[in-house]
Length: 314
Image 1 (tube, rainbow, N blue to C red):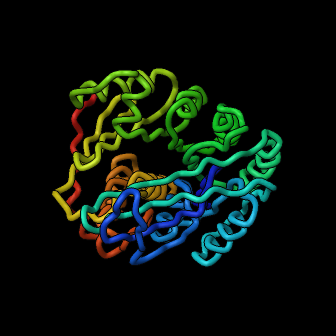
Image 2 (cartoon, helix red, strand yellow):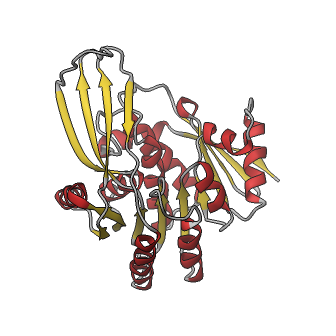
Image 3 (cartoon, rainbow, N blue to C red):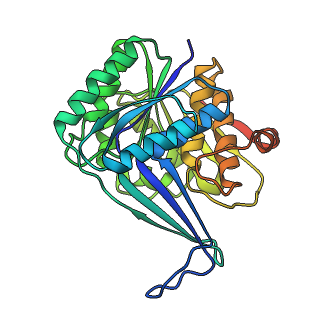
């Protein structure tokens, strides 16, 4: 069984506004509106499904927006099993200025209770027991649940020999590292935030990642925006680069990278092959107007242009 489980503990209804020119302090009328089930784990799920993978999405939702969220997932035919609670699932807005191409985001926070996580944990363990190849935990935590919630999920997966990919940031990432996940995926800013310093060179980025690996994390993937990405293992470093492409929307590109990488691992590809597929998916997402999505024809072209260089082996 190659089923991948995605965990989204703080999902959202993602609202996207297209506006010709955003004027602060004035009325801004949209030219297009799009509403989707959102959250980093949902973007990961969508990409895995588009690749043809076997995916199950889980997490915590609540209220009217939670029901809307689940209806959107069903419409996207993404198999799901979420815990429904009393709190209201958040709404996040991305306003895109068509004149400048700049994106302004408004991200709500959402409340939860520790008892909600405890109920979710029961559901999560039940799902793991049914047979899961790989788990992807993505995004922030609900306010009101403990910072080490991902640690608990990672440990439960590890007990059953299931790999766990963690994509979060800040204190939640710092705590999650303690549970030694299979892979973490900070971008350069997030990595620098962990070490409270700037990294001027690739060597410094690799050195920082190695410090994390010493704590038990198996692999660290650092995304570098238009400069590609780097995958650091205990003994090797892979650098991915791609030619300049026309960027339409970078929102969800990191999640798309995780989706491609996770799909590759679940299907038995090695780290290098999975890394290449992940970077190709992230690049493809950036070339589309949609968020956390890929086009298979474009992906095929992009894959051929991705270059993977093994730059260190010691």
